[in-house]
Amino acid sequence: MTDKPSQAPEQSGVVTRRMTEFTLAFAESLKDPSIIQSIGKIVASANSGILDKISQQETLIRKLQCSLAEKDKEIGDLESRIILLEKRVDENEQYNRKSSIRLSGIPEAESEEGEVEDKVIRICNNHIKVDPPLEKKDIVVAHRIGQKRAGNTCRPILVKLAALKIKDRIIRNRKNLKNISGNGKLKIYVSDDLTEARSYLAYKARMMKRDKHIRDTWVYNCKILVKDNVGRIHQIQCEADLEQLLPD
Image (tube, rainbow, N blue to C red; front, side, top):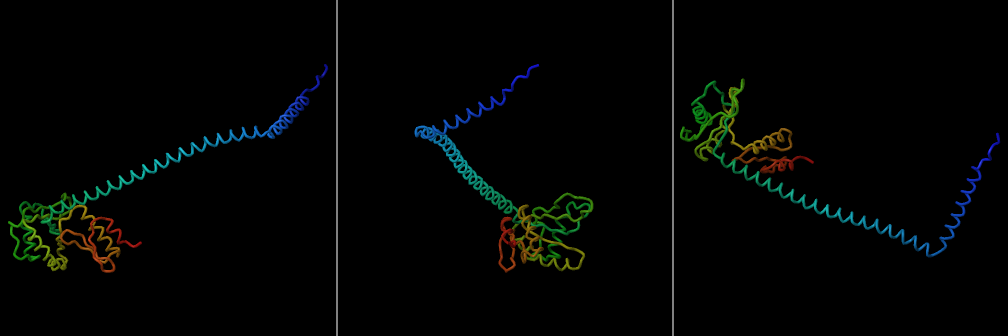
């Protein structure tokens, strides 16, 4: 059997030779200024298209940033309006409670029908020592608040009084309750009937006093007041007012 001569080396040589010829021809063409100019135009055209797209994207980003800034302002305005409305609602609700007080620590009987008012009058006259004495006509309504549960024999009493001046007499003399609270038998407290929002702020203020972030806190005429650690007095209207008193 006769072997056929291999054609692979010959074909490889042809390819190499043609590549060399192409390279030389290309290099020679680059000496022609018109060729260089044409390549420059092609590159410039490509770059121009890319730059146009970048410019369009930058314009779009600026528009989106402006739109986001406007939306942020709208959200900020809405949040401010909500805070203002919540404040007005709270003020209206607290105004409706201005003649009301809460008494805590008064023992609760199994059945107190018709007796709650009498208990309030006895506490106010015998222990708080209201002058002139409290009468039934001074009370619009008095009742326990909260659900009655096993073991909970001392639910607070909500008392709505006929006039603000009657409430002021009770609040002014409630310090006399220390005389019975100190003997360990009863611990009775009288407080303003605060809204839920103000009750929460008063609680937060007490926690800050406990943690020694403020010197003192109290409620006067349904307003939450605190004394900071340098002796300045602040009225607390929102949680942010308390946060400003925290150490950095």
